[in-house]
Image (cartoon, rainbow, N blue to C red; front, side, top):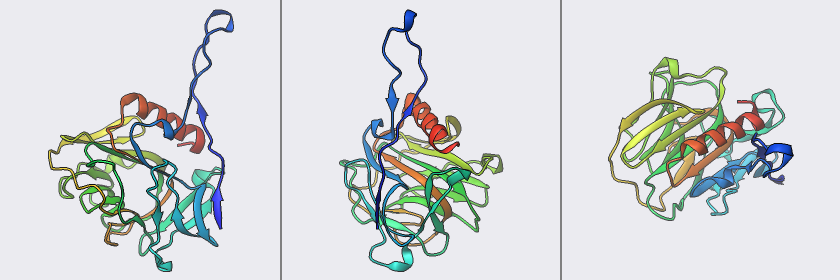
Length: 251
Protein backbone atom coordinates (compact mmCIF):
# COMPACT_ATOMS: atom_id res chain seq x y z
CA UNK A 1 0.00 0.00 0.00
CA UNK A 2 1.51 3.32 -1.03
CA UNK A 3 1.17 6.29 1.29
CA UNK A 4 1.88 9.78 0.04
CA UNK A 5 0.36 12.76 1.79
CA UNK A 6 0.71 16.40 0.89
CA UNK A 7 3.72 18.44 1.93
CA UNK A 8 3.15 20.40 5.10
CA UNK A 9 5.08 23.60 5.70
CA UNK A 10 5.60 25.55 8.88
CA UNK A 11 5.17 29.31 8.76
CA UNK A 12 7.86 31.05 10.76
CA UNK A 13 7.01 34.17 12.69
CA UNK A 14 7.95 37.58 11.32
CA UNK A 15 6.98 41.23 11.40
CA UNK A 16 5.16 43.24 8.80
CA UNK A 17 5.94 46.86 8.11
CA UNK A 18 4.04 49.81 9.58
CA UNK A 19 0.39 49.66 8.64
CA UNK A 20 0.59 45.96 7.81
CA UNK A 21 2.76 46.37 4.71
CA UNK A 22 5.91 44.47 3.82
CA UNK A 23 6.41 40.88 2.81
CA UNK A 24 4.56 38.02 4.47
CA UNK A 25 6.59 35.68 6.72
CA UNK A 26 8.58 33.17 4.73
CA UNK A 27 7.49 29.55 4.53
CA UNK A 28 10.10 26.90 5.25
CA UNK A 29 10.37 23.13 4.80
CA UNK A 30 13.30 20.66 4.75
CA UNK A 31 13.25 20.90 0.95
CA UNK A 32 14.85 24.34 1.45
CA UNK A 33 18.00 22.87 3.02
CA UNK A 34 21.35 23.15 1.20
CA UNK A 35 22.39 20.15 -0.94
CA UNK A 36 19.64 17.91 0.38
CA UNK A 37 20.45 14.28 -0.58
CA UNK A 38 17.86 12.37 1.42
CA UNK A 39 14.59 13.39 3.07
CA UNK A 40 12.48 10.67 4.64
CA UNK A 41 9.17 11.43 6.35
CA UNK A 42 6.83 8.78 7.70
CA UNK A 43 3.86 10.00 5.67
CA UNK A 44 5.56 9.06 2.39
CA UNK A 45 6.52 5.39 2.14
CA UNK A 46 5.42 2.02 0.79
CA UNK A 47 4.05 -0.66 3.10
CA UNK A 48 2.76 -4.20 3.12
CA UNK A 49 0.18 -3.96 5.86
CA UNK A 50 2.05 -2.00 8.51
CA UNK A 51 5.49 -3.30 7.41
CA UNK A 52 7.63 -0.73 5.58
CA UNK A 53 9.16 -2.01 2.34
CA UNK A 54 10.36 1.33 0.91
CA UNK A 55 10.95 4.69 2.56
CA UNK A 56 10.61 7.22 -0.24
CA UNK A 57 13.22 9.94 -0.66
CA UNK A 58 11.32 13.25 -0.81
CA UNK A 59 14.45 15.22 -1.77
CA UNK A 60 13.97 14.48 -5.46
CA UNK A 61 17.39 12.79 -5.72
CA UNK A 62 15.93 9.29 -5.68
CA UNK A 63 17.87 7.84 -2.73
CA UNK A 64 15.03 5.59 -1.62
CA UNK A 65 15.62 3.20 1.29
CA UNK A 66 14.31 -0.38 0.94
CA UNK A 67 14.11 -3.72 2.73
CA UNK A 68 16.31 -5.35 0.08
CA UNK A 69 13.50 -7.79 -0.63
CA UNK A 70 13.84 -9.37 2.83
CA UNK A 71 10.59 -9.39 4.80
CA UNK A 72 12.34 -9.80 8.15
CA UNK A 73 14.14 -6.51 7.71
CA UNK A 74 10.98 -4.40 7.54
CA UNK A 75 10.31 -1.86 10.30
CA UNK A 76 6.75 -0.98 11.31
CA UNK A 77 4.64 2.05 10.43
CA UNK A 78 2.73 3.40 13.42
CA UNK A 79 0.86 6.57 14.38
CA UNK A 80 0.99 9.02 17.26
CA UNK A 81 4.61 10.16 17.32
CA UNK A 82 5.48 11.96 20.57
CA UNK A 83 1.85 11.71 21.66
CA UNK A 84 0.64 13.65 18.63
CA UNK A 85 -1.05 12.70 15.37
CA UNK A 86 1.98 12.23 13.09
CA UNK A 87 3.12 8.79 11.87
CA UNK A 88 6.53 7.27 12.56
CA UNK A 89 8.64 4.26 11.61
CA UNK A 90 9.55 1.91 14.47
CA UNK A 91 12.81 -0.10 14.38
CA UNK A 92 12.93 -3.12 16.73
CA UNK A 93 16.64 -3.19 17.60
CA UNK A 94 17.17 -6.78 16.47
CA UNK A 95 16.37 -7.23 12.77
CA UNK A 96 14.83 -4.09 11.24
CA UNK A 97 16.80 -1.90 8.87
CA UNK A 98 16.37 -0.11 5.55
CA UNK A 99 19.14 0.74 3.12
CA UNK A 100 20.09 2.37 -0.13
CA UNK A 101 22.66 0.09 -1.78
CA UNK A 102 24.25 2.90 -3.83
CA UNK A 103 23.46 6.13 -1.98
CA UNK A 104 24.24 9.07 -4.26
CA UNK A 105 25.90 12.14 -2.75
CA UNK A 106 26.57 13.69 -6.14
CA UNK A 107 30.14 14.07 -4.85
CA UNK A 108 32.13 12.85 -1.86
CA UNK A 109 30.34 13.14 1.46
CA UNK A 110 32.42 16.02 2.81
CA UNK A 111 30.93 17.97 4.47
CA UNK A 112 27.64 16.35 5.51
CA UNK A 113 24.76 16.51 7.98
CA UNK A 114 22.53 13.76 9.36
CA UNK A 115 19.38 14.83 11.23
CA UNK A 116 16.74 12.66 12.90
CA UNK A 117 13.46 13.60 14.54
CA UNK A 118 13.09 10.51 16.68
CA UNK A 119 12.44 8.87 20.02
CA UNK A 120 14.68 6.87 22.35
CA UNK A 121 13.56 3.32 23.08
CA UNK A 122 15.54 0.57 24.86
CA UNK A 123 19.31 0.32 24.41
CA UNK A 124 21.77 -2.50 24.93
CA UNK A 125 25.04 -1.36 23.32
CA UNK A 126 26.11 0.89 20.45
CA UNK A 127 23.16 1.20 18.11
CA UNK A 128 23.43 2.79 14.68
CA UNK A 129 20.60 5.08 13.71
CA UNK A 130 22.27 6.04 10.39
CA UNK A 131 25.36 4.47 8.88
CA UNK A 132 27.12 5.14 5.58
CA UNK A 133 29.70 2.63 4.37
CA UNK A 134 30.70 1.86 7.98
CA UNK A 135 32.44 5.26 8.18
CA UNK A 136 29.78 7.93 8.73
CA UNK A 137 27.79 7.05 11.83
CA UNK A 138 25.06 8.66 13.92
CA UNK A 139 24.40 6.32 16.83
CA UNK A 140 23.36 5.90 20.44
CA UNK A 141 26.06 4.54 22.77
CA UNK A 142 25.00 3.10 26.09
CA UNK A 143 28.38 3.67 27.74
CA UNK A 144 27.83 7.43 27.57
CA UNK A 145 24.05 7.37 27.72
CA UNK A 146 23.69 9.58 24.66
CA UNK A 147 24.18 10.10 20.95
CA UNK A 148 27.47 10.10 19.03
CA UNK A 149 28.41 11.20 15.55
CA UNK A 150 31.53 10.69 13.49
CA UNK A 151 32.62 10.77 9.89
CA UNK A 152 35.53 9.28 7.99
CA UNK A 153 36.27 6.68 10.65
CA UNK A 154 33.83 4.95 13.02
CA UNK A 155 36.37 5.19 15.87
CA UNK A 156 36.50 8.97 15.59
CA UNK A 157 33.13 9.61 17.15
CA UNK A 158 32.22 12.62 19.24
CA UNK A 159 29.28 12.44 21.56
CA UNK A 160 29.01 13.21 25.21
CA UNK A 161 28.05 11.81 28.54
CA UNK A 162 24.89 10.88 30.39
CA UNK A 163 23.83 14.52 30.52
CA UNK A 164 23.39 14.39 26.75
CA UNK A 165 20.32 12.16 26.99
CA UNK A 166 17.53 14.63 26.27
CA UNK A 167 14.27 14.80 28.16
CA UNK A 168 11.62 14.19 26.92
CA UNK A 169 12.73 11.21 24.88
CA UNK A 170 11.51 12.59 21.55
CA UNK A 171 13.93 15.10 20.08
CA UNK A 172 15.77 16.49 17.06
CA UNK A 173 19.41 15.37 16.85
CA UNK A 174 21.89 16.60 14.23
CA UNK A 175 25.34 15.21 13.44
CA UNK A 176 27.44 17.59 11.34
CA UNK A 177 30.81 17.04 9.69
CA UNK A 178 32.52 20.12 8.26
CA UNK A 179 35.34 18.12 6.66
CA UNK A 180 37.67 18.95 9.55
CA UNK A 181 35.49 18.56 12.65
CA UNK A 182 32.41 16.76 14.00
CA UNK A 183 29.55 18.57 15.75
CA UNK A 184 26.58 17.14 17.62
CA UNK A 185 23.42 19.16 18.27
CA UNK A 186 20.18 18.54 20.13
CA UNK A 187 17.85 21.03 18.53
CA UNK A 188 19.85 24.24 18.25
CA UNK A 189 22.04 23.40 21.24
CA UNK A 190 25.58 22.28 20.44
CA UNK A 191 26.50 19.42 22.76
CA UNK A 192 29.93 18.31 21.57
CA UNK A 193 32.57 18.84 18.93
CA UNK A 194 35.85 17.23 17.98
CA UNK A 195 38.49 17.46 15.27
CA UNK A 196 38.17 14.95 12.45
CA UNK A 197 40.24 15.31 9.29
CA UNK A 198 39.72 11.82 7.88
CA UNK A 199 39.16 11.45 4.17
CA UNK A 200 35.55 11.41 3.01
CA UNK A 201 34.06 8.06 2.00
CA UNK A 202 33.56 7.41 -1.69
CA UNK A 203 30.28 8.31 -3.38
CA UNK A 204 27.83 5.51 -4.09
CA UNK A 205 28.36 3.18 -1.11
CA UNK A 206 25.52 1.78 0.99
CA UNK A 207 23.60 3.89 3.50
CA UNK A 208 21.50 2.24 6.19
CA UNK A 209 18.93 3.37 8.74
CA UNK A 210 18.47 1.21 11.84
CA UNK A 211 21.77 -0.68 11.60
CA UNK A 212 25.17 -0.64 9.96
CA UNK A 213 25.18 -0.88 6.18
CA UNK A 214 26.07 -4.55 6.63
CA UNK A 215 23.18 -5.31 8.96
CA UNK A 216 24.64 -5.16 12.49
CA UNK A 217 24.49 -2.87 15.57
CA UNK A 218 20.70 -2.72 15.26
CA UNK A 219 18.94 0.29 16.78
CA UNK A 220 15.66 0.32 18.67
CA UNK A 221 14.14 3.71 18.03
CA UNK A 222 11.27 5.56 16.38
CA UNK A 223 11.87 7.91 13.46
CA UNK A 224 9.31 10.43 12.27
CA UNK A 225 11.71 12.14 9.89
CA UNK A 226 15.30 11.71 8.67
CA UNK A 227 17.29 14.31 6.72
CA UNK A 228 20.67 13.93 5.02
CA UNK A 229 22.60 16.82 3.48
CA UNK A 230 25.84 17.04 1.53
CA UNK A 231 26.67 20.20 3.46
CA UNK A 232 27.29 21.35 7.00
CA UNK A 233 23.96 22.74 8.13
CA UNK A 234 24.16 26.46 8.88
CA UNK A 235 23.04 28.20 12.06
CA UNK A 236 20.01 29.67 10.27
CA UNK A 237 19.10 26.24 8.87
CA UNK A 238 19.39 24.67 12.32
CA UNK A 239 17.02 27.29 13.68
CA UNK A 240 14.55 26.71 10.85
CA UNK A 241 14.71 22.93 11.19
CA UNK A 242 14.19 23.15 14.96
CA UNK A 243 11.16 25.40 14.43
CA UNK A 244 9.78 22.93 11.89
CA UNK A 245 10.30 20.01 14.29
CA UNK A 246 8.60 21.90 17.11
CA UNK A 247 5.64 22.90 14.96
CA UNK A 248 5.06 19.53 13.30
CA UNK A 249 6.07 17.11 16.10
CA UNK A 250 6.19 19.07 19.34
CA UNK A 251 9.86 18.29 19.99
